[in-house]
Image (tube, rainbow, N blue to C red; front, side):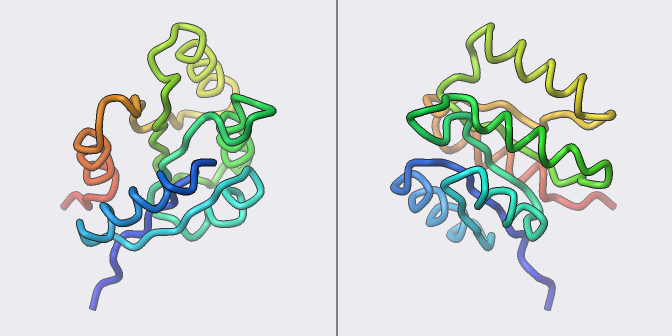
Length: 135
């Protein structure tokens, strides 16, 4: 039996992690969750796709960028990352994410950027695109 794709949900809001996990499990995925930079970095190697919020604490509203930079420091890391955040559509954040792709991506890019206000359907579509095997 083939293993279900495993999705890592990185968000500081526990209730959102629970809701997303329930939705993903209903769609046939396995889930992992992380509420901090440290937990995200520890769980990332076990994931087939990562849903990443940019704000992981009250003290720093861009810790998700730190997660991405640290993951991409490993040149072999190729797990798709979906940024799922309330900040996605601001010019400042879009520039920051482009800069991270240029400085750390080595050809890798963020798979999708989705606003939390855009709803879960867009997120589920992105997860399906990131986990669908071609061929």
